[in-house]
Amino acid sequence: MLGLVLSVLVARGACGEDMELRNRAEQLMNRSLVASRFTTPMNIRTEVTFSATGNDGAVTHGSYIRTRSADSALREDLVLGDYSMSRIREKTNAAMRGPWVDIPYTLRRVMDFVPYLPIRFDPTDVVTGISETKMNGKAATCIQFVTVRGEDRNPGDICVSSENATVIEWHDRDRSFQAFEYGSVKDVLLPSHFVYREGEQFSIDATVHFALLDARPNDAFIAPDDWHHTRFCSSFSMPVPKSAPQPASKGGVDAPVITVEVHLHVRPDGTVWGAEILKPVRDDLDAEAVELVKTWTYQAGVCEGTRQDFAIDASVHFQGR
Image (cartoon, rainbow, N blue to C red; front, side, top):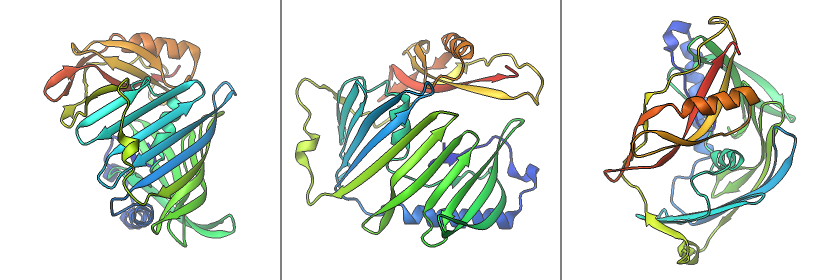
């Protein structure tokens, strides 16, 4: 995912990548990372308010409030329509209120960008070009790249400000991100207004406010007794697929691929329950994907040496459908 690491499954050498372009692209993104990364711990509150348009055209509103202390305590409060959830993590202790395992897809996408991290190209990504242009009347540099998954070639691009190296926008197949404004927090530049789009209708229009706190906000990390209190899992391993067959391919290797993302639970015995579509794609494929992942088996996830129920995401790829 972008903001995020771009990953591909073939070696770039096979694609004849121009290493001078590659090196320049990595230098540009290194500058972006430096521009948007905190290097010292701090007490900070980040408040995101947003409106989201779903695939059905319906608009919902929500918020994501993130309070972090200099000693790494973290509180998150999330709201989307009728959904609300809060969780606190401090050292090895954790507390939750609400359905914290099954966070709605829209909120999860918001959380991908807060705090924002610019793209870090995977060593196997293929950079195809770099061009100079102007965006919103200001000089910008755009990197063109291709992400490869098997026979699939996915072109994308990312444009950064020539003045301060901040990311202006990026595109990746049916996804795009545009940062319209940046705010400065201790000389770190972070998006204060951004729009994320995915597919033909799904979009998130978010405004972000940052507030440095004079002291550690101790009250923020005190959970009421009626919250679910537990221990934070500091040593864990996620479930690993043992048998996860994909649908039979149709139409040959050049046929288009439709990917359906599914959110599922893996029991301590490695079987699947509670599968649901993260973001609807097509009714027939959505239903088929849910039924298929219910047949998958995993090596169970482990927390502190004990097998536990884990909630994870999985992708089902339909080729030629």
